[in-house]
Image (cartoon, rainbow, N blue to C red; front, top):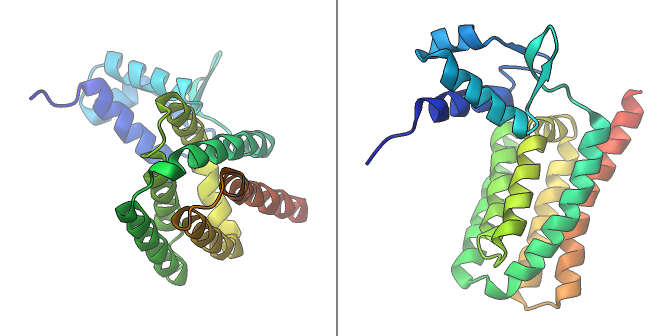
Length: 217
C-alpha cells in the first residue's frame, strides 16, 4: 500500500504547526526554506501551501508571498455563528441513529474533558471537544453537511484554542452543555429540543468570546 505523498506530508506538517501556534498569525511561509527543511522539492511545498490557502489558514500577498492568516475576531464570530446552525442540524439528523455505544463514548470523552480542565490542558481540551462532536457527526446521514462542518472547523481551529485558553469558565459550561445533549439524545427528546440545545451550545461560545473581546477593548 502506497504511503502519503510528499505534498501530503508537507501539508500535514505545516497544518500541525499552524494549528499548534508554532507558526503564528502573519508568519511568512518561504517555499524554498520549507522545502529544504522537510527534504522535498519546491513543488510539493507550494501545492501544500495552496491547500492551506484554500482552507483559509494561509493567505498570499503581492510582494510578500504566503503568510499564516491573521486572526480576525469578526470573522470568527460570524463563522462560529454559521457553524452553530450547521451543527444543530447535523446533530438532530444524527440523533435517531446514535447507538448506546455512541452515548458511552460521548460520556467518556466528556469525563476526559473534565480531567483536562482540572489540569488546565486547554489544547487537549479543544481536541477532545472536536472529538465529542465528531462522534455525533459520525451518525449524520448527510456527508455534505459533515464536509461543510469540517471545513469551517478547520478555519476556526487556531482561534478556538485561544477561546478556551482565555475563557476557562466557558470550558466548564461546555462540559455541562455536552451532558445536556447526551441526556436529550439518550431519552429520545424531540428534534426541536435537540437542535436548539446543539445550536445554542455554539452560540454561547460566540457570546463568551464577544464579551471577552469587549473587556479587552
